[in-house]
Image 1 (tube, rainbow over the protein chains, first blue to last red):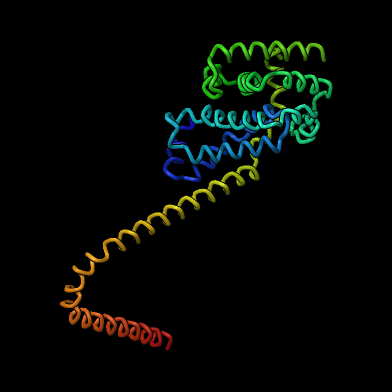
Image 2 (image 1 turned 180 degrees about the horizontal axis):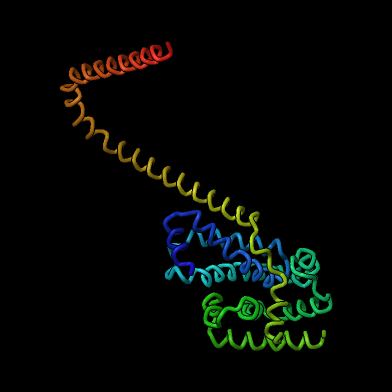
Length: 174
Length: 103
């Protein structure tokens, strides 16, 4: 799907790359926001950095059609570094309220939202990433495995555990 | 709504809008800046390498070009003078033509 745009961008077309940014910014930023526990500004900065790295290293992408998992892999590694560099505490500061204010979707029941955010925060970053990609973005397990650099079995177990955790949490909230 | 659909719906709540020109233009500005920096760096490397190569080859070039320039000096001067006259005549002709049309 992204193949022709990637080929054109490899040839130096900024218009083609702009189209790729346009196509993927929403899901990439949504993924990073969830991974960074709602810190939208930080997540958006990481998304920008990921796009810039992708632009600079497009020649290293083997299959042009694998652009999406490759891009998300770059973003995921950047988020992992950000999370590792001493920002874990801030993640737990309840910044989900800020995200709630920015959301363009119809408002959710605050109790439900809190339960969901708490359940997601309790998951390890790689579990959270797998859950977000497979359950929210509708990726296949192999695609998520490719993007996150994890074995397929690990992705399947992460998704199953995350799903069970979320359902239990939502069940309690409703 | 199935449980999975419900989870998907809830997890997608934090998504930014599908079109965000501010974000997109910020990314493309950085891309353009990076491209410009790379082009400048490339031009700098090429010009430095070229300059260095010319400097290294200067003694050999002088040996080759000096006799050549001496032999071509007369012809080159005549050629330059002819070209200058032709250019001047051409310019005067164009001006005259404009004046005639204006009148």
